[in-house]
Image 1 (cartoon, rainbow, N blue to C red):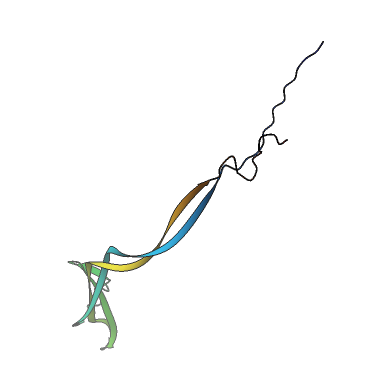
Image 2 (cartoon, one colour):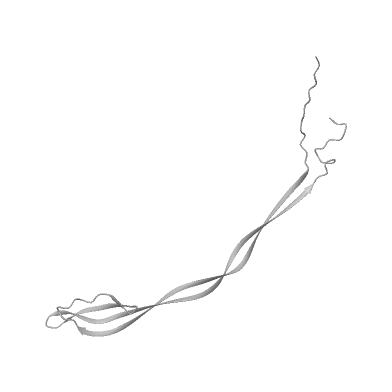
Length: 131
């Protein structure tokens, strides 16, 4: 009994090339920001007032958005008593300003070039009649 068999094989062929060029460039751009800044002003206000012995010592307090820090000293009178010498009034002000500053950004671009190779004359092609 006779039988036929078929075999299939693949021959790799170069049909073209692809080239990818990547370029990186820097670009100067102006970045706009809205910055907030708080300024603090300190002023000294003389009080020069003797405190009563029964009076509590004044602590740090806040009045109408102003922080007040008492400054005490002891003075010799017939007895030692606290004496309110001065107060520091600390006022805070918040300002907002728009600023622009240059920044350097990197940006890449890719260029793809395809080149076909003629199938009949390519480096791996076979001519008719060759095995």
